[in-house]
Structures are given as C-alpha cells and as structure tokens.
Amino acid sequence: MWMTRARGSVRSCLSMLSVLGCFASAVTCANAENTLYLDNGVIKVGVDLDKGGSITYLADVSPDNKINARNVNVVNTHDLGRAIGQSYYSGPRPFGTAHPAWKNWPWNPVSSGDVYGHPSQILDHRQDGHTLYVKSMPQQWALNNVPAECTFETWITLDGRAAWVRNRLTNQRTDHRQYSAADQELPALYTIGTLHHLLTYDGDEPFSKAPLKEIPKRPYKNGPQWTGFQATEHWAAQVDDQQWGLGVCHPGVIRFLGGFYGQSGAGTTADDPTGYIAPLRQEILDHNIVYEYRYLLILDTLANIRKLAYQHRPKSNLPDYRFDRDRQHWRLVNAKDAGYPLSGRMRVKVEKHSAQLIGPVSFWKAADVPKAYVRAAFQTTADTATLYWSTTEKPGFADERSVRFKIVPGGKTLGEMRTYEINLAKSPGYRGIITGLRLDPPAPGGPGEQVDVEFVSYKNQ
View 1 (cartoon, rainbow, N blue to C red):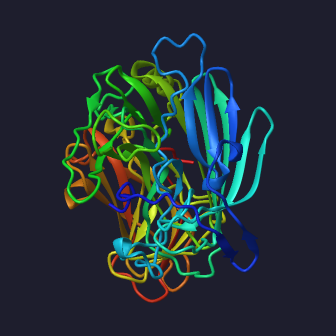
View 2: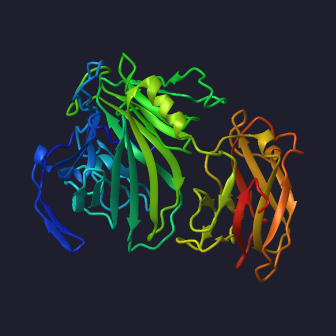
View 3: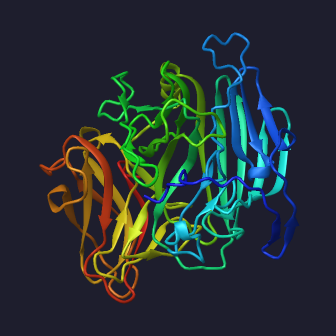
C-alpha cells in the first residue's frame, strides 16, 4: 500500500515560496495562536493554520470527565505526514523528482505539508462558533515545496462527543490524462501512542452487537506495518488499555487500513509512536473533479463509539448505483470514460480487450437482491455482456460467480437505452454475502466501441 508516512521525522518549518505563480507567504513554526478551535464544552477540536488546516487537536474537555483523559490531545502531529486530514492519490507514478526515500511515489497532495517540512498554504479560514472552515492549497507529499494543482476545503461541526467533518477536493490539474483508480485515504488519521488497540467489527452480521475484533499488530520491518481489513459496520477505533479513544466512522465505507507504529502504549502528540486508521475507497480523480465526503470522529469509550456508529448507519446497503453526476465509486479497467462531470450516464470507451466496470466494495445478502437491473446502451459488435459478483466466502470475480445476458447492440452507432433484467438467484454461485459487482461489456472490444450506463441497481427504475 502507499500510505506509510509514519516513517521518519520531519518537523522543520521553512519559508513558503511562490505557489503556482499566484501566491506568496511566509510561515512560522506552529503555535497556539495559529490554531483555530471549536469547543462545545464536551470535546474541543483544533485546526493548525501552520499545518495546512489539518486537524491537530482533539480532546475531551467535559468537566464531569471520569476517565482521566481530560484535555489530553489524542492527535499525533510528529511530522507533516500525520495529524487528521485529506490525502489523495493518482497518477503518474512516479510523480516529479521525489525525495530519495519516496522515489516511486505518485501524485499525492497532503493536508499538512510535504516530507521536506514545507506546510500547505492557507487560502481562507473562518470560525463562527458553530462551524470551523478552512481552505488550503496542499503540498505534494514527496516533492520539495511543490504545491498541488488543487484545493482542499474542510468544514467541522460538533455534536456531543462527536465531530462531523466534511472534506472537499477541487482539482485544477494541467495534466488532463485520466489515470487508473487508486486507494484514497478518507481521511488519514493518526493518534497518540497510548491509543494502541485497533478494533472494529469485520463479520457477516453487522449492527447485531456481535463481538468486536482487535486487529493484530504487525512486526516492525523498515517502516510501519499497516494492515488492510474490512469494517462492515463502517467504523474503527484506536483505544487505550481502558478501551477509551478515538473512532472514525465513514458511513458506507467497508475497506479500511490501519495499525500501529513504534512503542505501544507510550507517547504524546509530538512523539514518534502512532496509531493509524484510514477508511479506503478506490476512486478515479479527474483533472477537474470536485470530490466530497463526510465522516464522523468520535472521542469516547469503545462501547459508545460503536453505539454512535450504529445511529449513523446507512439507510440501505442494497446496490443502487445511478450515474447522474458521478461514478458512484465505480472504477474502470482497460477502459476510459468521458470524465467528470457525468451528465446522466457513464459513457465508457470499451475499445480494449477485457474492458471492465467495477463497483465499490459493498455488503448485502444475496437473498435480499434476487435480481439486478442494468440500464445501458451499447455501441458494440458482440451481443453478450456479463455481470460478475464477489462474496465474503469467495472474494474476487470468477466465471462461476457471473451471469451472461443478451444485449441489443447498435453496431456502428449507439443503440437504444434499454433496461436489462438479470436473474441472479438462478445462479448456484449467488449465495451468502455479496461484496461487489463487476460489469463486463461485450468482448473483445474494438475501435469506436462504447457503452453508456445510466444505472446498475436492485430496482427496475
């Protein structure tokens, strides 16, 4: 995986030079005067304007605190690769002339700053007592003082022991190539070393109060050993020996990455040991994309973190992907689409062999979705498409977990938009928990061939 920034220590503060030829700013070492806070009398959150507006402070400030953790900042800010903030990945790889320790690193703007110690630049900020807002121009993590061609925006509000965070990436890249999907940290979250137990629920009966699982620590080998895991209740937490700590809930996201680096059970916000959590999605980030997501930070006991995550569970987990404005977290293999923004459909060039449209990691019971509906128009010569699925028992896509269905191709012109009904329940391989879909247009593909997809859904409308 790419996300291993806990290695090394970079804490120097240097001067910010010209930013894309438009901005210039001098920066100083971080201090309390350059941190904006939001405090509801229960928890207090802060963003550091000298670290790109990343969340660098989160503490329990309740006067009736009985867990001996009052005013303890749980966010690790040992270097500019940490804190809690936005981090995105795309091509090319490698990107630019990277630091020797990161020489094969891709395009990767990061909230706080770069590996050389240059912080990201603040463009706007405000705090009205209810919402904390920051806009910044991030640095490319592995490069030396290279601002990214994008902006980050963050909105934070408080609700009891929880902070709602909304993040937005706005790309303005001069490189207009469409790169393959990459894992995105949504967000990247680093905690202090005393929060060294990583827990979640990863089973097939989410929201049933079934026993939690502690993700085992991996041995140190030339850097932090993060572990990929599934969180079928959409949350994970780093907690201390008394099961108190910080949870992150990203409704709808199941793939997570996390772990611990350094000496377990020791360290404060400036020390090297750190816990790490990142909800993950694979996304294509177009040169002009506006990409948003919301997540919840919960500072509480493990039991209460889980309880609040239950309250914010998605209304439905059934597959209902409608490509009105965006890709709905679908990605492409051996194919390209018309780019962002979508206009009522995903228009995909399928000129290469084995073109694939792959949906996000999901979770539903096969019995709840006996049929799938694909509304699409085809400009192809072949007349058969295939819908695949993966399961918890048998991850990945294979012929025994697929249904081929006849389509009406348009030949040299785009055919009529039609809704295709696919009877999944008739397949002996469609059983148990379904974790994702893949749509393969007619093979083998050829010059000028394309498919327009309006939706893939469990509903016939």
